[in-house]
Image (cartoon, rainbow, N blue to C red; front, side, top):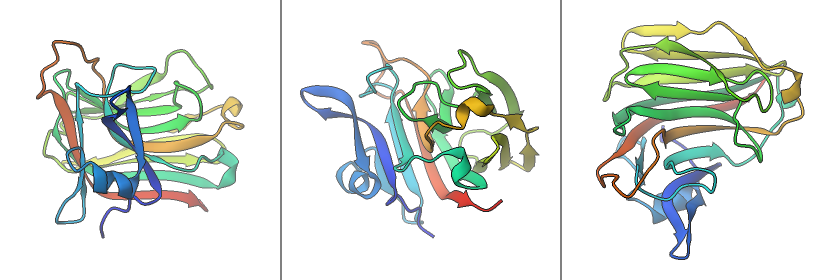
Length: 226
């Protein structure tokens, strides 16, 4: 089944306008129609996301992304279980060999609850147990997930704030121990993100060929019964 981008917003590495260098955000299907150089539908229904390191970024960073995000925010207590399941293949990663591939973000804040990284063929995650915690607690869940290797990454979060990360790929089926988001997250508005978000700052010397590219083969965003 083709990946459905219609309920999503795409943050692109393209400037909003010649006079506004901030990254352009578009509804999913509009992004597919207008920006095939960075996001495109493949013959098998998957979607290619491309984020050159040298490009447009958000106001708070010098890092580019080609990333989907849920258009609607939600609270933990809005459903018993919240799931972000993404089957993907990284085909290129920036020169730092580090890219964010999934997030649990929070409205109007730069400190997401959860970030999932591909880092030199390892899958790691960072969890902020408390809202606006200065530094997340990080750990590694999987290794030997190389380029051109399909894998599935899933964030599963309960209404009580209990969260686990699972990774399936390269013969592995791994699940983290549960982490706990504390009560400070209960009133926050949240949404899931995914795709590629470069973890390297661009500069005047950044090569035009530097960047990250992924294929998203399947995407399930579930807010419902556990």
